[in-house]
Structures are given as structure tokens and as C-alpha cells.
Image (cartoon, rainbow, N blue to C red; front, top):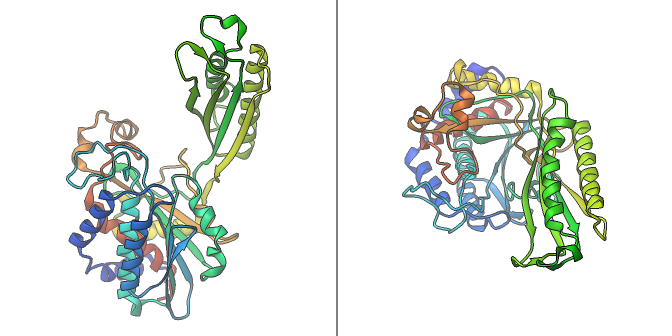
Length: 414
């Protein structure tokens, strides 16, 4: 089934019975009970229960806390739908009546929406299984935020224990006036690396700095110098972000510590740019430590996080056409590559095409009240993913379900 009009028509039929109140209650329950990476036991159990009730064969504990539901429905393609489940170590500040009940933990990135959409789509497709044939596999992935969830599921045999996909599909809640479905064929998300730096100094009394090698000062020079790496060593036409997110040193005001620890995050869209920046980081850290007379060379450890997410262009074009037919031509546009990162692509076996798109979720009143006239000005002034004020418009629950249903139907045999 590939004609957008036919897919859209069938999607409307299969989702006509969606129960908005049920989806809302399910979403609010997930939002009240957020769980951090690899701790998604309650969330996984709720997803698994709904899948079993819909007729899926369900396996729990895949990749520690992941869920896989399989609905075999005759001959045809195998379609994987993926949603991530984990929350963030963020203290919620929305004031909502369904705000997080877990202090310091919040669904600030929309993964509660993702699970709700997954449940709605799985139930609609299962109820309408006489309209399609093939195998539908629903993936509840743990630990996207920590970067290890998809890899853990792969290591636990998700590619060999379950029907091999012909296509992998997923979507993400995003800031932007609710009611739009951005698609990007090709590169859509950047690669991400974490870099740990240890500066070894010589500790001593704060009153006698001349007897020490102060790693705090050296670390401060490193932080400052690193700000020039992207601006002075990466071409203006290339994209990269280098952030120092942590700087830890010392225990007391009058003690010069023996070491300082820094944690960096690097986002790139090109492997050559990545290698250039990593070399610059190592050179900068080594140079500042040598200039300071550090007694031991610094440690620089690169931890590869997420690869680039590169949509299959033909597949994305196909699904974007279905979404245009379903929601209107004006609702789908190409936002271009973002500096955000995902481990979604790791769930696709080598050679299997995948597609990943956005569902915008900002309430209209919040969007209208945000300063700015241009799109990017508005986006800079509404609560974004990872904000303690992130609060999606619940009107997106049904449309976000339909995006998944229609994407799956575009490949399942009619």
C-alpha cells in the first residue's frame, strides 16, 4: 500500500474509534510517574499490559527494561514502531495537576507522549488487522537519555530474537505550534560524543599557592580556550557544538585541590569535523596543562554516544506525502538537520531503512504569547525539550497516534 490518499483514508477508518479520554488518562499517569534511564519498570509494565490486551505477543526485560510486542498478521512486510520511555533528572515547574510525583524527575522530553502514541497506534492497528497483512513489532526502548538503551537492546538480541524489520519508524515530540509534522530526508540529527577530562595538579594550602599547581586555574583556562575551537577551527559552513557541561574541583575554600574534572559534550554532523574538534580538544587540554606545569599529563577520554541519524530519503518522502494527505500540505515541511542527537538508528539492522520525524506540541496560547515574529524567535522563547516548563498540548495525542498508524500502513500490505 503506497498511495498516500489510500493510506490516509484507511488511517482515518482505523483511528475513528480512538478514545481521547483514555489516551489522556494514560498519558497523565505516565507523566505523574516518570522513571530514569534503565529504571522504567512501571512504564514498561503499563506498555506491556496494553500490548497484551491488544493481542500482541509481548517480551519484557529486553535490554534490561525494554519491551517488544509482536503482532503477526499473515504474509507481508515487517514494520517496527519505536518509542522511548525514560524521563530526565529535572525538577518539574509546570504546576500542572498531573505534574510529576517523583521529586527531581520529570518527563521533560515527551517520552510519555511517545509511549502513549505507541499504545494508541498499536491498539488501532491491532483492532483493524483485517485491513492489512504483515508483522507489526512495537518497541518500547529504555534509556534514550543516557544513550545506552538502543545499544542494550541490540546486545540483548533484539535483531535476532524478533522478526527482522523491513523498515524502522519513529517520531519525537518537539517545540513548535501544535499541529505540524516536520520531515527531513537524509541527515536529521547529529552525532554526539561525551568527553571526560581530568587535570592533575598539586594540591596544597590556599595561603601558599606558590607550592601548588592549581588545577582550578588550569581548568578555567581550558574552558575558556575551548570556546574558540568551533569559532576558529571549524568552517562557518559546517555545524558543530562543543559544550562544557561540568566542572568539578575542590572540597573547601582554603584548599587548593589536586585535580579538576571536566565533562564536555560534542555535537557534529560530519566525521571529519568530529575528528578535527577532538584533536583540538586534546591539544588544548595538553597545552594548558603543560603551560601550568602539571606534574602528570591530563587524561582525555572520549565516550561515543549517538551516531548521526540519517533518514532514508525515499522512505521519508513517502511517509511525508502520507502525512500531508492526512493533515494538510501546510503541516509538513523540512526543518533541516538539528544539533540534537538520538540512538534510534541503532535499532535498524545494517541495510534496513528508517524514518524519524517530529510532532510539534506547543499549546497555541503559549506560542502566541512568546516574543518574536520569526519562527526561530518563537522557538527560542517557548519551553523546549529538557525544560522544567515543558508541557505539551494534549490535543496532539490523537494526531500523534495517527502519524504512527499511517506510517506503518504505508508499508504494511493492504
